[in-house]
Length: 151
Image 1 (cartoon, helix red, strand yellow):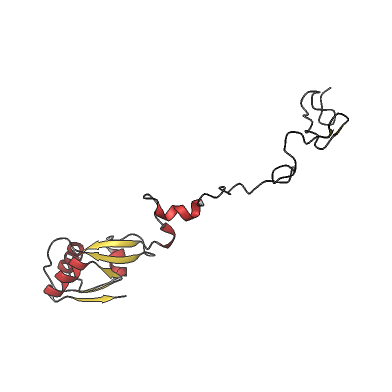
Image 2 (tube, one colour):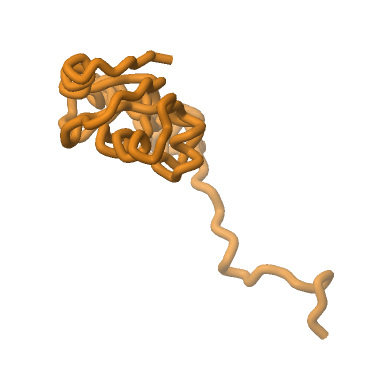
């Protein structure tokens, strides 16, 4: 009957390890094809798996590659166009900040900063509180006499 306490591996399934440093009468000590005394001759010898044998390591080559983007320190923004803000101004909002943009569904992530971009011209006067402004948006805002506060 087969049960857990009677199960044994088959005869051929256990592979025996290679015997190192065995005595042989014809050539004294053998080294089992690992060489004599060097870094890789012992079972515990060798180098770390990430060692690249003198080549510039990968972590130092990464920033030089074209496709490499260091997203660890990247700042992401909620992008808002001036046209969206002018639509809100037409609805009657004079002081626009992050909370109002969230309420109206213009931005959807409250953790990210708000960046103001230029798209179309400005019609009415509004005061806006944002985190960052593009150059073109800043020029248009100065021409329209808006008040913009960087938070």
